[in-house]
Image 1 (tube, one colour):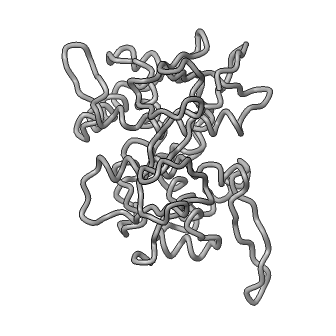
Image 2 (cartoon, rainbow, N blue to C red; image 1 turned 90 degrees about the vertical axis):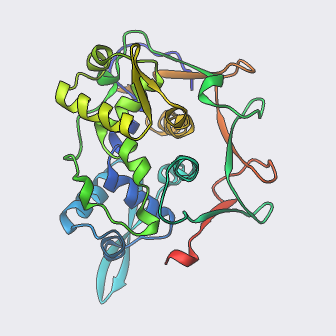
Length: 305
């Protein structure tokens, strides 16, 4: 993170938003982390149409997040497994779970996150990899490539906008708070722009190059969900909105690690003010303080399947 880049074009963060700013894509990847590999199992657990599922699996495979392997079930079929690139999204999904658990009212509990290091149910603390101190949005500064707007950083839309009423309602798929802010392209970029300090309606329009009707809808929804507050100075992130900082930072780091090519470069730099280092985020177990990786934590889903 924090590389010096020249030229224009899609940024790694913009490409990450383009790949993952879709409700069905997020739910398919979430289930892949829970062990789903076969078309029929995604269709059954998500209650998703064949055409939508096939489209998302095709896009995720083309993007290098999933790979196919043959298996035999009467005849040879394909199953889908997370690639190293896909598996590296684990921190992003743990950050989503942690935000949901802390900020989104729900009718039932989310699965517990278990840490193998201490053997306890835990939550995660978002820390600076350099000094290992906890980091919030208030502790960090974000700068971007000169002249880059959120709109110019984005690739073309991949999928048609989903209808929110079509999503599954079982406990494992009920990230409804997160899907309101990450589950479609414009919601995600509005949140990213707000995190970059955009405040007024006009500034959002210039940054996003979005129609006034679409922007009004997303801003209204964010105010209703207490992610943004409106006032004389425009729109400002609430405590709930600022608490999405780990989600966006994990996504930024993932994009910078995996999506760089000749046409796509890092464009955002996040610095931890406390120690002055570029923020290389580390998730730590809240119970024992130990840094955790993908193999050390898992969701206890036995009661939900």
